[in-house]
Image 1 (cartoon, protein in one colour):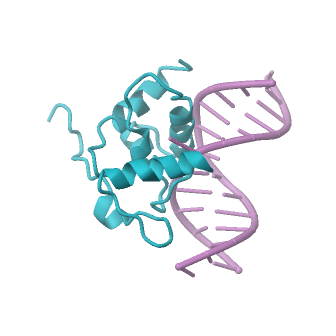
Image 2 (cartoon, rainbow, N blue to C red):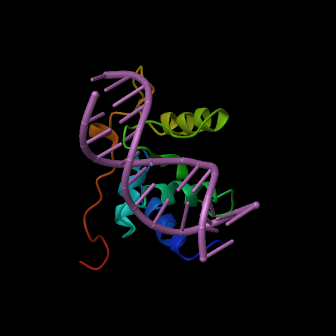
Image 3 (cartoon, rainbow, N blue to C red):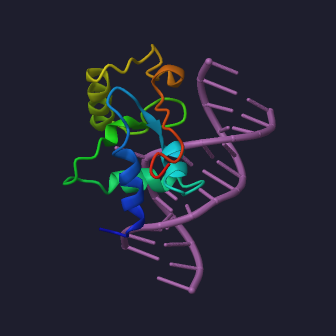
Length: 108
DNA sequence: GCAATGACGCTCT
DNA sequence: CAGAGCGCCATTG
């Protein structure tokens, strides 16, 4: 484990409900890390395996998959299996599938 | 400790 | 609408 900072990111990603997606920037913000979108991607990459985190529900701000090669195809596959639809451009319509968490969500 | 890298985001062209 | 450039911050060599 690199640092405890990632725990916060994992905690947020774990809250993303099935059939919905969150953007890297959104996760970063929810994890109290403004402008930390890259760190979210970095954290998920380090996720090699172990904790049951729905990393595949995290996409970029354009609603597309930032991964390359087989990894991207695999993520898309999983999302489609959850009901997430992709358009002809391989992008998700965030207006319909973006996760809308309720602020705070914890106490209060 | 500095330089380079990266599963990003926003703005301009 | 698509592509390129710059900024952001943590991890790694």
